[in-house]
Image (cartoon, rainbow, N blue to C red; front, side):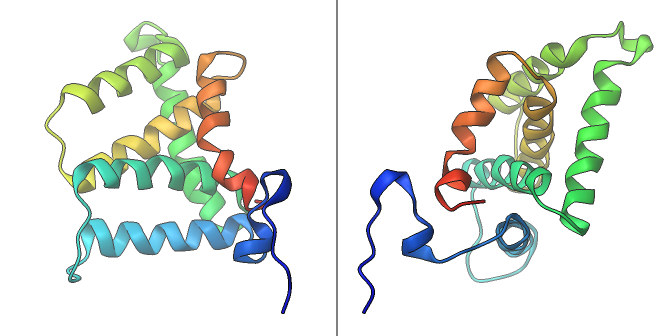
Length: 147
């Protein structure tokens, strides 16, 4: 039997190696069955939001079709931030708008997961600001798994 230690903040020895594409696939299944599907258990809006933001950050770290999903959400928030019809509100404006919506809008699990995927994309696109620090905090589990 192998001695599994969690020294240096690594979970990869405990859970085994996993890629960003593997994490993304797991989070897609959780979103589909936990938010949209008709399974026995359903996610409430709060957990659905958490799965959404972690899902988007995992999508942006992966390759293949899940990266395409992440890039699609990323292009939506970049388009909103740089839209001259909205007054070029910038990525900070988009991030703050999404935070306000997640705090005050009536959210069901599906819209919560979608909203948080947009928020994860906005945080990742806003380099060099407090939003980058939030991405770093949300990415701690991925770093611990070696993703």
